[in-house]
Length: 292
Image (cartoon, rainbow, N blue to C red; front, side, top):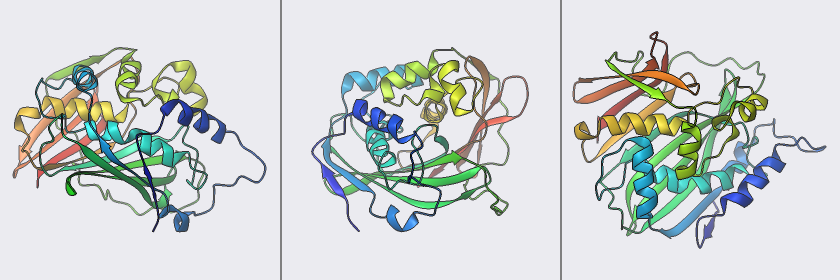
């Protein structure tokens, strides 16, 4: 196993330029084969990063988290995003970063993180496998403080492509089969993707404008999956224990602008939640929070 340690988080402007170039088909470039033997070398580490209070405050506002000195539980994902993009633009990554779709995410928080604490981030790539709509891979993130693991994340991204693979039935992710119903309806503005991009750095074209999402196969630009997860968690913040896991499956894109219905229920110590269309029970997000 090998990896690189960076002195600071990589520059996103350069990574986006690299991502754009990596999306151009070139003679001799073939990412269609199983590259799992190379994935274990795709690792990056930043020894020290401290969340910026101003950025955290803007993130809270966009995602609906209440004020406080504790870091929003989804914010380490934002800190890790430049490292994720650096790995996804590596020539050994199995598919182009542009157009990749976030389909599932799991977070395990072992204890709350204070905004001023110094964090170390480790990211890696593994579990390349076929999907019914192409191929998927998992980006692993570990956040430590004084060499103690305080936060872990698993980000599953999909590259949509033609496939003849037979995928086993069943849902391996621990989420409910159906979204709980609820009275809350959220009206999402057209610029939500751009608002979230400004605080997260995630400027995937599918989230910005209809015209930038169209070449990626989307008729409309769509909300970020991590915004929808963060918004749901913010709504449940007064019911979440200090140590917990939260697993989310992103089932159907949320077109912007749009309306979604939020629902949640508590059962056997866990909280099941979901987002559906405001007009029908078709799920956009299915999630479950469990105490650790």
